[in-house]
Structures are given as C-alpha cells and as structure tokens.
Length: 150
Image 1 (cartoon, rainbow, N blue to C red):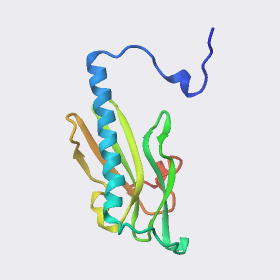
Image 2 (tube, rainbow, N blue to C red):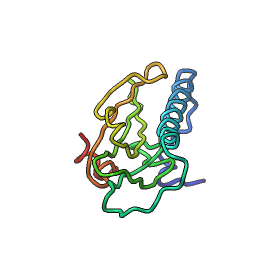
Image 3 (cartoon, one colour):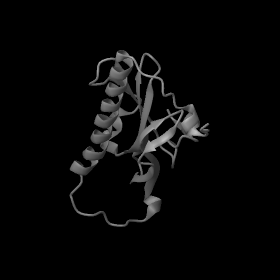
Image 4 (cartoon, one colour):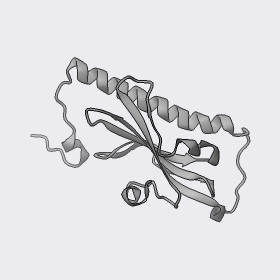
C-alpha cells in the first residue's frame, strides 16, 4: 500500500467536472499571461546589454516567484530580484469568487508603481487581479507578507 506524505498527501486526484477543468485551465492561462507580462515587460524595457554590478546597498531586495499558492508555496521560479531604491516589491493575487488564489511576486520600478493597491478585471472572465506593494527588503516574502503588504 503506497504512502504519501508532505505536499503529495494534500493533492486531490478526484476527477474534475467540466466546470472544474475549464476553471483550472483558465487559471493556468491567466497565471501564464501575468508571468509573461512581468518577465517580458522588464526584458523589453531593458537596453539589451547585461547590467553592471552596482553596489547592492543602492537596491531594494524582493522575493520573486512566478507561480505560488498559499497551500503549496512557490511552484515556479523562486528567486530574489533587485530594483533601485524608491521602487517597490509587489505581489499580484489572481482570484475568483470560488476562492481560487494564485500569486506572482516580483520587483516593480518607479514607473510601474501605479499598479500598487489596484484591483482590476483580468482578461479571463470571472477572475480579477489585485496588486499589493511594499517598500522594505523582502517585504513580499511569504513569511513577511502579512505584516508588511499595504
């Protein structure tokens, strides 16, 4: 008899109905779209040349995760990002009315701070995106998020 522990034990393998499959596919598509926007937006804004190595005390250090849930933690791309002082750390919550919540955490430069504490409808019907920003090193880390996110 197989025994599962840890995260595997909490996963449900019951079949999803047509509505559940559609909702899961929409959620994955939305997470991919948001992740591409975050990653490609930074790449397109850059000059294309590799960054210089400036002193680290001139930067805000943020937690980066491209796909995260509260139950399972970071599922894709756990890392640290740096942004110039005066910028922000951000966590985007992708939610729907049935309690689905996926997060994307990253750095935001000054020009992108207009998104802070902003809720908007997503391109996928029934979902919305809520931005939370903070301004201290690693303030968007899951351990610090509840105390530091505005």
